[in-house]
Every structure is written in C-alpha cells, then in structure tokens.
Amino acid sequence: MMKLSEQRSSMLHGVLLMALFSCAAFYIGGMDFVKSLSFSPMIVGIILGMLYANSLRNNLPETWVPGIQFCSKRVLRVGIILYGFRLTFQDVVAVGLPAILVDAIIVVTTICIGVWAGRLLRMDRGIALLASVGSAICGAAAILGTESTIRTKPYKTAVAVATVVIFGTLSMFLYPLAYNGGLLDLSPEMMGVFTGSTVHEVAHVVGAGNAMGKAVSDSAIIVKMIRVMMLVPVLFVIGYFVARAAAKTGEGLSGGRSKVSVPWFAVLFLVVIGFNSLDLLPAGLVDFLNAFDTFLLTMAMTALGAETSIDKFRRAGAKPFVLALLLYFWLIFAGYALAKYLVPAIV
Image (cartoon, rainbow, N blue to C red; front, side, top):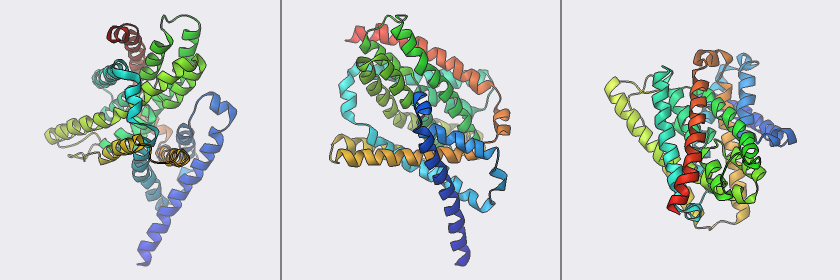
C-alpha cells in the first residue's frame, strides 16, 4: 500500500512540474512581444518543454516520468474534449455552404497530398500524417488529437508541431501584407474564407484577420472554427485506415500496435460542441472553461516538449519541413483559387 502511495506521489511531482511550466508559459505568452507573434501559451509551453528536455532533463528523477506522460496523454484528451466550448453549430450556419465546402476540399486534399508526398520523400509515416493533419485542420490542436488516435512517439508530435508553427507564423505576416498591398484580388468576405481555410493555427488566423480589418476577421475566424470541427470525422477515418493497415502488417504507426482504439474523446468533443450550441451556460463560465482548457493543453504540449531532445529532431531530419513547405504552397494555391472562383459561383 505504501508503494502505491509513493508511485502516486511521484506521478504528482511530474504533473506539478508540467503545471509549473504551464504557468510560466502563460506569463511569457502575456508579454507584448510574444502577443505580437500570436504565439499561444501552448506554443510557448512546447518551447519551454524542449528547452528543459535539452538542458536539465537528465537531472529529473525517473519516477517523475509517469506524471509527464500522464499530461501528454490523459490531460491532452481532456483538453481536446473541452476545446468544444469554443465552437457552436450556429457558427457553421452563419458562414453557409460555400465556406463549408471550401474547408472540406482543403482538409481532404491537404491530408491526401501530405501522405502521398511523405511516401515519395520516404519519411516517417507518423510524422508525415501528423504534419499533414496539422496543416489541413488547426495546427497544434489537430496534431495533438491525431497523436492521441495513432499514439505515436512524443518527439514525432513535437517535430510536426514545429512545422505548422513556422508556416502558420509566416502566414500571419504575409497574408495581411499581400491583402493590404493590393496583391490579392479578393473581397473582404473572400479573403476571410481564404485566410480561415488555409492558415494553420487559430491564434494565427486571429492575428492575420485583425491586421486586415473586421470584415475579414469575422468570417476568417468562423471558417477556421469549422475546420476545427472537421477534426472529428478525420480522426475516425484515420483510425479506420491505420487499424486496417495494422491488421495487414501486424504493426501500427507507432511501431508496435496492431489495433487503434476508437477516438471517443473526439465524440465527446462533438458532444461538447452540441451542448455549447444550446447556450445554457453563463458567458463567464464558458470563458473560464476555455481558459482552463488552454491551461490543460499547455500542460500537454509542455509534456510533449519535455520528451523531445535535439537528437530526435536530427533523427527526423529536414524532410518534415520540406513536406510542410510543399503543403504550404498547396494551401495558398488551392485556398486562393477556391475563395476566388468557387465561393462566388455557389453564392
């Protein structure tokens, strides 16, 4: 009985360590310079975790490791479920069929192209899938959701997150520059669809949208959140194909699993969206839940970073960033064409 108590205490130490790092991530994320980059506490958290992994990590008692792993798995899933409080089905109705169709085309084609290109590059299948889903849907949050479905190694998740952070940040500066400079022949509504359907992170969409005006920002954010909702069906499809492939080869993307569990956290994510659509909770409580959810996701991201050393990045090589660049060009080309020609045709 004493041994079990000691194990729980050791796990608590690891959890508290990640919570402490998350508090620091929130503090740093509140600085003006970090805000200007639209780096969310989640992104700051994974950076802090990686800095820790490559400096003081070896001094951490091994008994604390289960607590870190608890944050990168269990806490992560709770965070994904609570993410549903940021969305409502009314948002879907508000933007109409054209934006939904554009989102669907972008998501499906980006994932398919990413997986195909990953094979051509002969890169790790897990990293290729994570980077593709992150580029297609909502950056780090989508990568975390996919990681919970295929259960790959933490360093692969960190590599994939790094790719979407780089190109999402680049978009946040390039899109307003191109739009305000008159280089894009798009109306504010079309630009909103283009931005929301192609920029990686929600925070980056907010940053880019605000730089282009309210008319662009409002539609961009809604279109982006619809992409977030598409994470649920994507996770089910990924789970099905990975399980089928594992049945043939005897192993999954993680290298040892022959069966992938149904992502019930994705179902609960959808249930939370439905509940939030009923508008039964006070706005203040919803704001608190969203802030708490961001803290949980920050803990998960920090834990993933704490398991990622520079050696693991070297092992992944340059191929993930080459793949992310190819997908970035595809997002710009396809998103612009769909926003300019498909949206007006349907409307």
